[in-house]
Image (cartoon, rainbow, N blue to C red; front, side, top):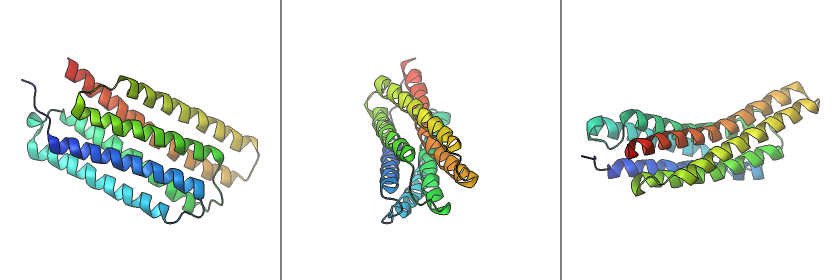
Length: 205
């Protein structure tokens, strides 16, 4: 007999999806307005704390009910919660690096990657809704994979440009770190997609 979905767990994952969207949107706005961030970096930091809280609640819910009573494998719940947390963690790291490294103005490619992250996070949030609605994920997963490839290409081009311009090596290192954090946030969206794809396949088998 197929196990019934846990409405509390579903709501927690949907809350995590909304938090991912919010963090991505705030990061995009931060890069667009930096260095005049209007407290956006602090709001992103608050999203990181909220992500930790939601992740803890997800794992506590799983422990409370036990894997046998959940409609999702414990390993999938852990992997999904961790990947969602990573999206926000890396977004917060990029925001922190902007201030910590004394960046005076963002590079256009950073804003472009943040835009990709906003789109990917929207697909992630919508995909999480499918945990409740039947797992019709195909087009969304394809789009997340496409967006990850797009972000990867932007990062490669941006890093190549940094080295080609012959600017201060310390500036190169700092921006390379920021680009890697941005890319890691998009990569985490793809990890979410991979976990959801695995869950979908299990449900169909």
